[in-house]
Amino acid sequence: MVLVTHATGTVQIVHVDDVDPTEVAPGILRRPLPATERARGWVYDFAPGAQWPEEDVHESEERYYVVSCEFIDCGRRLGAGSYVVFTPGSVHRPRTEIGARVIGITLLG
Image (cartoon, rainbow, N blue to C red; front, side):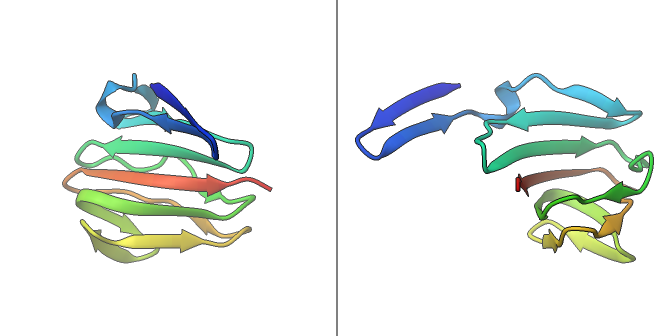
């Protein structure tokens, strides 16, 4: 990660593939991105056939963007370029048949 300081604040720069992944469930890798006190970012790589292990309940607002392949969430097939916003209290359990990469942001209270 590179930190750049400007008169207006600090900028954090990272190449996603340089972040070490952690397996959060079989076939699902998580790469945490730079965070602030107001938001945190992440990238998930889903292998073909992977499904989130349980229902994901959102305490705060969360949004994600499907970067590649196809994600199945909330009963919809979401291809690359799809953008999804979840309000606090919403629930979902995403999966994929062919694999997917999603990048997202969780807004913190």
